[in-house]
Image 1 (cartoon, rainbow, N blue to C red):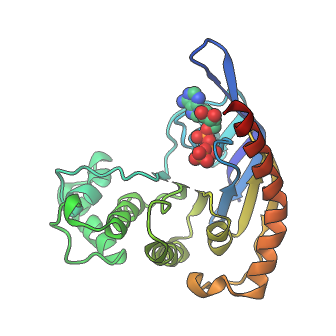
Image 2 (cartoon, rainbow, N blue to C red):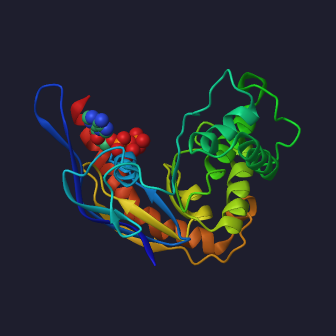
Length: 265
Ligand SMILES: Nc1ncnc2c1ncn2[C@@H]1O[C@H](COP(=O)(O)OP(=O)(O)OP(=O)(O)O)[C@@H](O)[C@H]1O
């Protein structure tokens, strides 16, 4: 069943000089229940804007965006959002941060803390419940962020370059962790990344967006079977073949974006 659907979605922003800037144009994209879709495209092309339309943070200027068949008019039920920057409160403990979502949704304190403790354990942080954010490494903070998002049991998980600030090894570890948790929950994921290797390692489909203003250029199915070993996958001939096929599509958009950045500079 289709869970997220963008039909001819266009988003324009007002510029500081009173004009308009088209961030995305005529985007058509469907994501099914339990599907893992990665979005790649040149820097600044409009990937985050696409997620903002699905999350209800921004309305579409034209076209329609539906989640579970309903037009998006505010933040839809069942949508979880994980950004590049952490959204944790420094004065709260790990338990306090992870239980905040369920508490905010009206779950009783004991139940909220119980659910939070369960998710803290699932992301490998059992024993760290009473730690504060400054006491954690970058990778541990990402685990908290994952628990904080997944404790709400979203049916759609929107991820905007969530691991890009991590070192290569921690990043691979978090990717493995994410696939493991996703295989248990099977929520739909829309994952924005600059990193084509990451996109292929994680996703069922890789959507390539054009240079700004972005629209969907290509939509590739990743045939690599699951479960996948993220760290070993990169040497796999099927992975290399998939990479070169998608890069052929993406690289020309990256070149266009670079040329227009050079003109502006
Ligand atoms: N709220 C806003 N107001 C005005 N312009 C915006 C707003 N949000 C995004 N834009 C512009 O829309 C374009 C697309 O931005 P967006 O962040 O969606 O791109 P992106 O592909 O996610 O970028 P990156 O690859 O750098 O993360 C950019 O030119 C950006 O400056």
